[in-house]
Amino acid sequence: MNDTTHPGNGRDASDVKGRRKIHAVLFDLDGTLIDSEENHFESDRILLARRGITFSREEKAAYVGKDIHEMIRRVKANYGLSEDEQALVDEKNALYRNIALKSSRLYPVMRDVLNELAFRKVPMAVATGSNASIAREILESLGVSKYFAHIVSSSEVRHGKPAPDIFLEAARRMGISPANALVFEDTLYGVEAALSAGMACVALLPTGSSTNEPLLKNIGYLVVGGPDALDTEDLFRWMSRLL
Image (cartoon, rainbow, N blue to C red):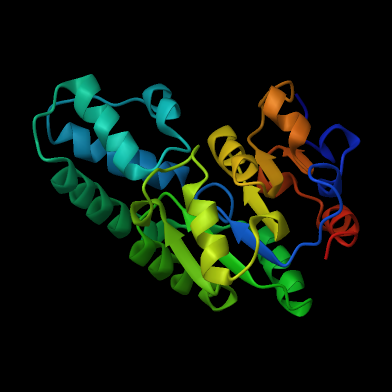
């Protein structure tokens, strides 16, 4: 499939729940704002290699979009690890932090999106499955932490994505109704979480993703090819009706 950008099924977000206005924008971090999946894979690979387990990219694909606690629970079950869950989470976070602070890349087009939203005085927050303090350090190192009023981690809510908890908590902290939030996400788990929260969604799915998933009928704007394939002029033409 070629990289494409278009509104999902010709629908704008106002069709999802009647007429709506966007009062804030919420961003996933990994794969949406920053190109970091390789960093996560490498930290997972090292974590498991220390325990004599070979971990492949194909195996990693099953965990993309899940929060870190859910991933560690699954890893413990799949590989028969008896160690404490929080200890494994802490070790994984330490590995990821050391790697990510050296090699995380902000998608260039997302800097343009952040600049334009800031120019329009649209409040923004990050809702991520990663550790909040590590996320903040990464965003600071990339020079974009100033854009975000809040950084919310899935560890601060009861259920991670695809449950809506993290987006609902972000909306609560920003003092807005979920119906007035727009989410940028790059995984189907994240899209499901945004829609379950009653929010509009821009889906930035990786190259090769199917556009036939039923839940994609309810999003506002779809990009296949990830953030690098995003046409910001087209995006803001679409968004102008909502802001």
